[in-house]
Length: 201
Image 1 (tube, rainbow, N blue to C red):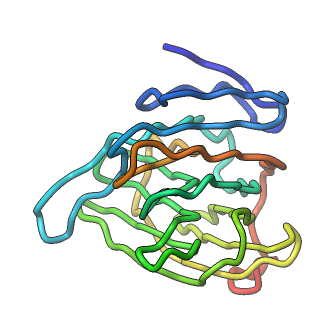
Image 2 (tube, helix red, strand yellow):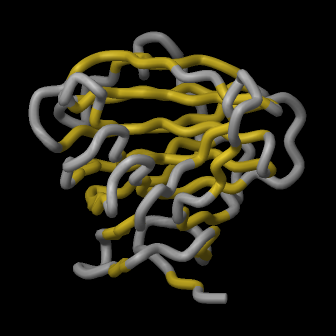
């Protein structure tokens, strides 16, 4: 199993599904290229399950934490995305995506999966970069986005239920295209809880 470290991440990361290519150069950045038809999604209609997108995951040492990053995506095909993932099991997980919509616009998308996935499109983003953050407060999670990395807006507030094997990390996906490259920079992990979920502080 290939493992590696990033300066601001507490512990080793490992791959769940190998990417087409990846690098952590400079040392505080992570670039992930996903191959063709890669995704994480369990269709709520029961038509299909995808669990093939490459993810670099680690086990957070703290019960309450925040993981944030600037994501830059080389958008080419519909649903291309750079992703922050929360993974308990193959049927209990969530992802915060910077994704290319069917309308040809980058946007914030979130998916929460407990046996079946939902799919929630949020705000359209101008440009190919955005900041995303996932935060755990006890049994709840929050997803936020930011244009500058300092002022955060709430995307999603939810729970995944009781957790025993939570891992978090970074992913790229190319559900309809041949490949997608996402660059994760300004990566930050810190212990603690948000004082106000909705304001992101």
